[in-house]
Length: 443
Image (tube, rainbow, N blue to C red; front, side, top):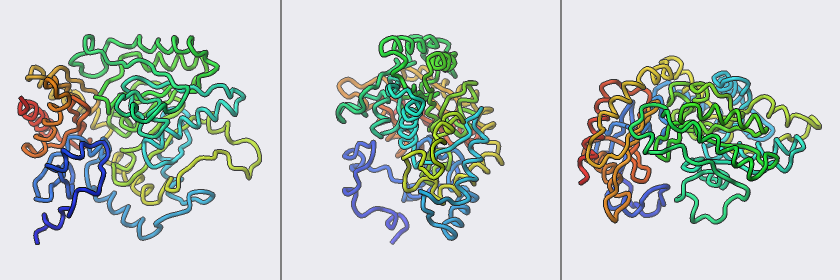
């Protein structure tokens, strides 16, 4: 029996795959069996260049020895520690390290296991915070059209992706949405933050006028909307949102599950834009995808508002069995060491211009309607095939994997590329070349 035969599953039917066209996949699977550095490998041994950092998460690349060693050692030392009423040293060490990377007084970390859990945690704390301050009417949450905030009921309620929402009922009550910041007419083929669109933050004033500030708990936005097609923040937009939130006492939450840990050239995009949110949601890159982990960073004033009442009383009735799991904490500490040792955040910043130029060099290809780049991320909007919306991008993604040895991501009729931060200059050119070939391969 060959290695490829050993790695192949016996049956594809039992696993109902997430966010996947299951029937199409199982007719012609895109299987991955191992990884190293910038590459995945199929069960047959074919190398596939990782153009997506896994799922936006493997920022340090794959199977880095120091991270693997840290996880192995931790598994042999402490497999699990009770999460409620007990702690283990690495949880506190990692929280301190993350808080040191965060801007301003975002000094406190609450650990969860995913971006979805981070968002729901932030939304719950926002409502509870106002309640503690005697403003219990502040329960309304404001998201944004074409925003993605995970798949919990809170996250899809404030999120603005129609397909994620329409079959799941009425979701949370008391939610409103800012308009999307993307406008192809004014922003097509943008490298970095577009000049047009900062004024769209003023729409928050209209939402306040409609509902009254006394009912609004928080606004949540992504500094770059990644999952809906790499939508960069317009210049001045986040700064204006911060001003309006301050004006009305509304909490501002940055969902940095994708933008955190180097994707935008900094530990957090909040630093790139010079805007201090009240909370930052993170996940993905904190362990470079090696173990499930997420969390929320809170400003000191929010945390301290809960630290009242009897000393022996639980301050926040919220948490998860696997919050700050020892293996995930070990992975997080080793990952942060690797980011620092190899200056990967700075490296991402230095490569951004070259990355953007390489991706925008594909402007003019058949059926390319728009290209957007910011940080180490890019999106290609493709024209739909008549009566087959989504087929062109799906086929381009499929062909890139099977025929060209490149992993890309899909968002409707948009092709996404978001490589690990260790991508070389030559590999940037290779990614651009293969994306171009994949797009040309679909008539």
